[in-house]
Image (cartoon, rainbow, N blue to C red):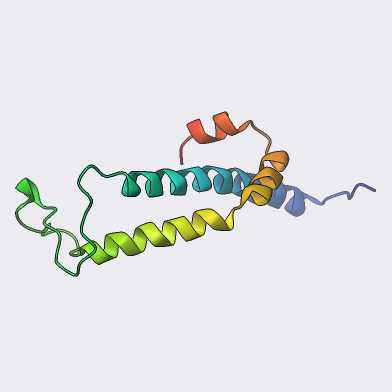
Amino acid sequence: MAINLNEVQRAYINEVVRPMIERLIRFRYELDAFVLDADNQQTPIPNVADTLNDGPGGTVPRSDAPTLQGTNVTQLRNFSANMRDQINAASQNALVALAVRDVQSIIRSGG
């Protein structure tokens, strides 16, 4: 049996729920890409507590941002992999089945 929605409910479904389905699909692919990039660096960033020199020339840390350490990068990589894995194959298939657009269009649309 179909459920008739009032105006507020329709807006919620069309402006919040459906876009969230697509964002989750896109985000899963973005997380996977980040993990793949991190795992395949030609020269990996060491997993150490030393400050990363990501400022101009690569010899000093950025002065306009908090400093990062190699351990921070590893933690971000691991967090991203764990988040990606929360959207397992069954969950991903369920999201794709509910999406309005095809996956390629969702991924290409960016953020």
